[in-house]
Every structure is written in C-alpha cells, then in structure tokens.
Amino acid sequence: MSTKQSLRITEIFFSLQGETSRVGLPTVFVRLTGCPLRCGYCDSEYAFHGGESWTIDRILEEIRQHGTPYVCVTGGEPLAQKGCLTLLTRLCDEGFAVSLETSGALPIDHVDPRVSRIVDIKTPGSGEVMKNHWQNLNVLTRADELKFVICHEADYQWARQLIMDYSIHHRCPVLMSPVHGGVEPDELANWILRDKLPVRYQLQLHKVLWGNTPGK
Ligand SMILES: C[S@@+](CC[C@H](N)C(=O)[O-])C[C@H]1O[C@@H](n2cnc3c(N)ncnc32)[C@H](O)[C@@H]1O
Ligand SMILES: Nc1nc2[nH]cc(C(=O)O)c2c(=O)[nH]1
Ligand code: SF4
Ligand SMILES: [Mg+2]
Image (cartoon, rainbow, N blue to C red; front, side, top):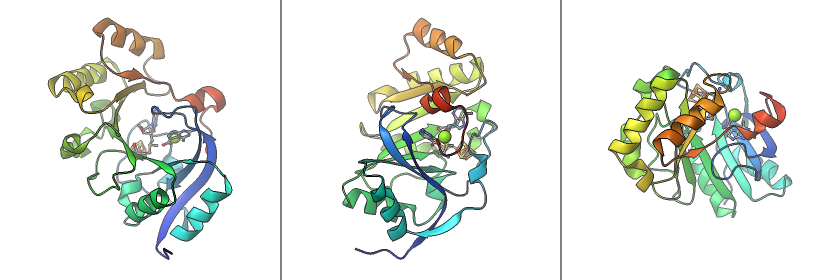
C-alpha cells in the first residue's frame, strides 16, 4: 500500500537505543516535530518547531536504507500528529519491530497493537503532571512499558506510591531513570534498592556515550 500522507519530521537517525528494555540495540529513530507539553528538563526542545514535511512512503524508504529491524518513533510528541498512527501501522506491515515513545498526555488506545508503547508518566517535577491522560494506565499490556523520569526525591516518592497503589508492575514492565543532570544517578539507585521497588533502573546510554547531541 502506498501512503501519500505527510508528517512533519525533525530528524531520522541511526544510533544505539539508549532507553527502555531495547537498550543497546542498533535502531533507526524517527523524531516527529511538535509537542503540546513543555517538560522543564526536555532534551529535545529542538523538535518543538521547524522540521520538514515527509510523505510516509519517503520515511519508509529512508528507514529501509539503514537495513536494521528496530525502529523507534519519538519526538516531540509523536501522537500529536494525525499521520503517526498510519506510519506506525505501515512500519509494522513492513515487518519492523516498532517502539513508540510517548508522553502519556494523549490516548494510546488506537496505536497498532504490534507496537511496543513506551508511556512516560509525567511526574510533578516535570511541570506537566496535569497533562497525564490517566486512562492510558488501563490499556497497557505486557508488550508496553511505563516510564518515570525522576527529578528529585519527592518525584520518587510520588512514583513509588503510584506503582504500589495500582500494582502497575503486574500490568507491564516499569522503568525509572534519573533526569539527566538532576538527581544523582546513584541516589535514585539507592532509593530503589532500599525499597526493593519492582522497577528497571535506567541511565540514558546515548548520553553516557555521546553527551546530549542531536542525532545520537
Ligand atoms: C524527548 S521525549 C520524546 C517522547 C515524548 N514526548 C515523551 O516525553 O515521552 C523521549 C524521552 O526522553 C526523556 N527525557 C527528555 N529529557 C530528559 C532528560 N533531561 N533526562 C532524562 N530523560 C529525558 C523523556 O522523559 C522521554 O521519556
Ligand atoms: N540513542 C537514543 N536513544 C533514544 N531512545 C529514546 C530517545 C528519544 O529521544 O526519544 C533516544 C535518543 O534520542 N537517542
Ligand atoms: S513531552 Fe517529551 S518532547 Fe515534549 S517537552 Fe516533555 S520530554 Fe520534551
Ligand atoms: Mg532523546
């Protein structure tokens, strides 16, 4: 099927997946332009504006050039663009293993079920907690992951309470990472160990390797 529908794209690049349970896998990233949120720590502000219009056919052609099975659709907030759902389905139809990084501010229920949805619940420290679309918690499956980016101890306590109150770890894997340049990475690790919290701790691998560089 050919798709003439267009999306606004900030960048398409090839790197090691730096986050989620797919960390370390060579992956093609598609960064969609635009985001209705303004998290205080955002490392991708360059994707808020600008970009270039690409047809879905052209995006697929570019991805195929890299000859790798893993594709991560991110942004900006990818679900804020109407054509994103079509892009995700086309990628799955072509046999790619697709993950979607989303803020959790928009409904995820119409995403193709073959996609692994990485839902970042916004904490109070992000400044965007009021944007969470809480119904998303009810549709997560074992193929998805719920993620918390922790800014300070109050964020950690907030996230811990939510995970335990709703037994989120029984629904899908839960990820927890320190905000880059914020809470000390070992401090968050020690809190998780102290509380035996059933989450997977993560550092952004690409920043360990390359710092905060666009296209990495
Ligand atoms: C740039 S966002 C794009 C996708 C979507 N808008 C979202 O927020 O999930 C991708 C991931 O990077 C995380 N992120 C952004 N800035 C960060 C920072 N300074 N430290 C740690 N993680 C960060 C976000 O929380 C999110 O999980
Ligand atoms: N290497 C690398 N891995 C990533 N995983 C998620 C990213 C994102 O910005 O959403 C990202 C990114 O920007 N770079
Ligand atoms: S939702 Fe994602 S892209 Fe948007 S401001 Fe927050 S971290 Fe950045
Ligand atoms: Mg990033």
